Amino acid sequence: MRWPGRSLFLLILLSFCLFAGVRFDLDLSRSKAYLGEPLFATFTLRYDRTMKVDRIDFPPPKLKDFKVEELNGSAPLRRGTQRLRIYRYLLTPLRVGSLRIPPQTIEMAYQDRENYRYISHTYRSPPRSLTVREVPGALKIVGDYRMRMRSDANATTAGRPVHLELQIEGIGNLDFLPPFDLRIPAAVVYPSKPEITTRWLGGTKYRKYFTQRFTVVAERDVTVPPLRLRYFNLHTEIPETLQTAPLTIRIDNPSLRKERVRRAAFFFGGILSGIALTLLALLLLRRRRSQRGTLLQRVRQARSDRELYRLLLPYSDVAQIRPFLKILEERLYGKSTEQIDRKALLNVLNEYMRN
Image 1: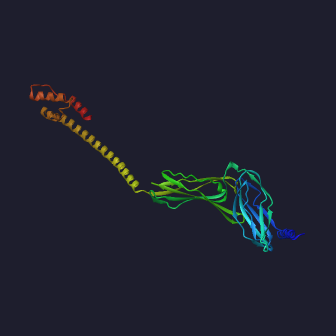
Image 2 (image 1 turned 180 degrees about the horizontal axis):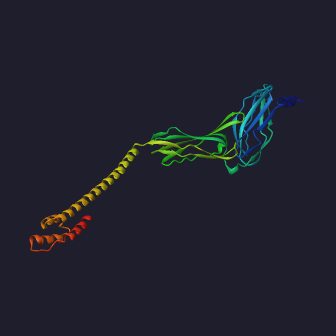
Image 3 (image 1 turned 90 degrees about the vertical axis):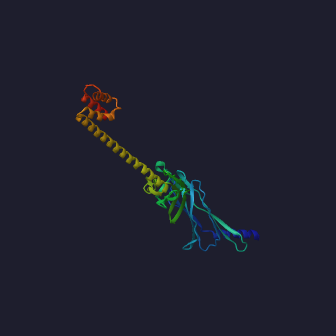
């Protein structure tokens, strides 16, 4: 065997010896899940710590039936005589049925110090299968959450913005939660795009955070209505509803306050005017009744035609009384002897004074 062929053979043999005993595994946190329920996928590379390794290349998996979210890469770990590289991902199933995770490839390489050539070898993880079930009630959001709304101020002035922050945290597929539409009567609301982050807590524990902010501008006091989230609880396996507490924001508006004072003044002024007019009408009615009683009494008590004539003169323009005045004038200044029918006069006066 010539030298170039022998060199290539030696390199291949050396590569086989160097990378023998390497294991690349995949572990799933569960074999069954609901649609949209994230699960942990842990890829573990194990190799002897005496091996010379200059480069390890493992791109994030591309799986058509899953949403893949990388949690962290891993620096080399020592465990006994082995070194480990651990790669953690959250996989969220996108359809129902029996899903398969095909083998994933990792590449290990070292550089020959004499010719600077890289000698590499690839390893494949074993395939894994997962059974994905439909969510009862066809709910899209699954998990276990807490929800709250916070405000940076409970009181402000007209036209000055108040900032609200909605936060939902827990485990589940918050990545698929659409933005909330907050509507407040008598206010303008500017929503922001939600921010969704994931925090790995070690092992197979994690937390997702959904944060959406709103800017509210109002001219008067407003109440922020509750926001609601209906989801399938993965722990209780029943649909549940969360909602935020309503918030009241006090708005100080000097112009509106003046307008309210002006309206209140008009309102109470109208009431007082109505009361005054009513009292005046009652007073006039009472006075008129008093005058009527006095006139009737004086007419009854009049002892002479002249006295009766003077009592009736102020009413000379009243058509019903004018005939009685004419009879009195004829008696006083003429030669008539016609008598006044006082009963008829009293009836006419009573009817006139009543109207």
